Image (cartoon, rainbow, N blue to C red):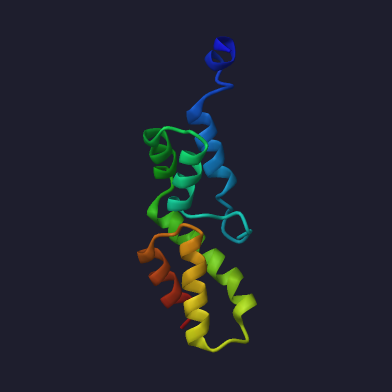
Length: 116
């Protein structure tokens, strides 16, 4: 066990960074796995990653990256909401982005820019 940990096979830091990458889809490919910082922190904590390491791994994603990812997810979701009234679209889009772990300020900014 010590051998594997020494070689980095059992590193919490590597596991945290890998999880963040797995749930960060590049813009233009907003898949169902793209998640916000809050969701990622919760996922890492539930996997037993110490809070400090989880916050460090999630902090590597900049505010701008978070905004771009949230916009990509929102645009992909708009196809599903296209036949609904604007107020219903906004409410559902806002709720979905919040459930994916994006910050309320990011969600508000994305909803206002995407739904205009």
